[in-house]
Length: 244
Image (tube, rainbow, N blue to C red; front, side, top):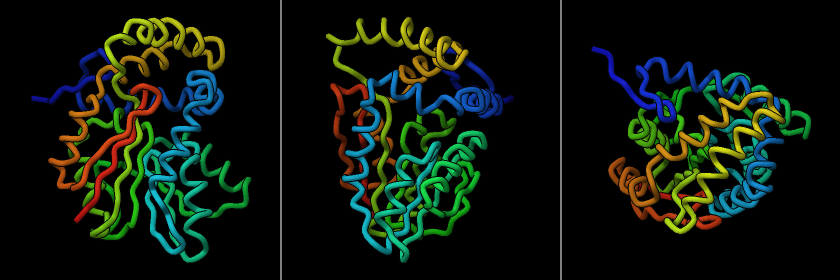
């Protein structure tokens, strides 16, 4: 029997989810950055700046950016790691990866760009000083397997950073739901001509583990010193963990 998982609020076969998520990001790739700015009123840039600061990348570091999309994190990591460093910009979605690669090249930043699955990373054990994933974990079918892979490729002492949408306090839930299920699909239709993809976005956020659950998952994957930082009242959260 085939296993099932969730695609937003819909139950689908596991092998279907990859294709459905791919369709979403193929559809929104061209307008991804514009929509991110509109959806978050630019706050996603602040969240990413905080994540980059917490990463503490230094010259010579090896960094893996998973679900790197349009390259916001990779761009800064390349600058910080310098000529002696190594920064891999990766994504499972070719359309998103192409947009990010072109943005990096347009800024004169040349770094390896690779199409790969976070659940089966094609890198050796104990290779990277830092691994990051921003707004990508919730789209992965087997999050536990992906987290285990991220830990595997980290060097001892290396840090994993997971930036993702999370859970707001109960007092904010109702207005947040109105915004998520009414405003976001409307914006998606107006700007990207795609309401369904942004309806999926809202549903996928609700299905993603909350802060404490994700912390436990990272600990179960073998990471130590796991902590999280709520950003904008928990609309997003940055989880970090160390491989000892």
